[in-house]
Length: 397
Image (cartoon, rainbow, N blue to C red):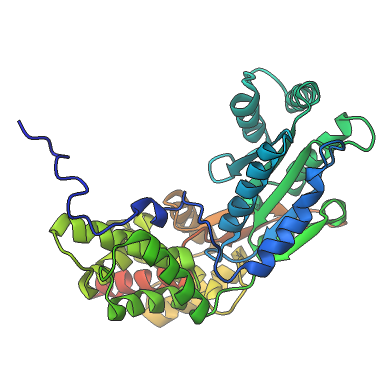
């Protein structure tokens, strides 16, 4: 009896499908040479075999411009060098979308790296246990904290202060903190900024740079002639509209999967159009079909604010509500009070379309404020899909 997977990889368009996935760490980082060398220089202090010290470095920038890939690429080489030179150093990657609190990160670190059962202990007890383990094993750890804006500034400081559990002049826990630019500005205060030795501000890719990056991944991922030049240009144009390299790479992956499932030897423009609508599953069409017009208006208002200029990562409840009222007028939809607006916002947050975070106002100020942002999904994509869904829904009336 034949097996469903008997024909797997036969006549596949992929040379290496894994090279198009988010988990892949490339051997080369096109268009990030300067940032790579700067991160190497910052981490090189950890390679003294006789003097364990720590360093804290922030990598800041918009989504899809290589922050995570840069950190993983450089620390992969750091670990390899350490093994070759008998330096007891390890790296550990944490994404705060999965581990949203200091406690959950500590438990993960304790379980994965030191086989310590983390439950039942306070954060302080876990830190002391980890510090004792590091001392006994003469080990150093570089902890990569991705999407660090999901944490509080004091949580990051707590990891930095863990080095105070060692003897004076010794550090065994170093941090690479990855965050959006505006979020990092909101988080940063005098205490935290004084403990971060370097900050790499990654600039958005230009269209030419995106073309180089996507061409590199195309050669890794596909056999020759699978992605014709005119189709490749379509993908570059889509990525350039959002400035998001990850967006373009994901579209290539989806297109390749479509070609395989249909038995096609090349990717055609229809595959690209279909993949563009599938790249973000949290924005699948049925999500919007179930939303009320006012909920769609809220999503559109937020997307318009966040796509109105470069570097706008967050908006506030008041700004979003004002834009909501303006957008209601445009589409002739009944305006609702701010209390109802907050309920619509809760629905969008629960669905993963937007993210709302509450933060302290800042050093010397009392009170807290809610900030609204998008994680990983470009504002232009949400704007485009919500406008389409809203117009379709209004036509039905």
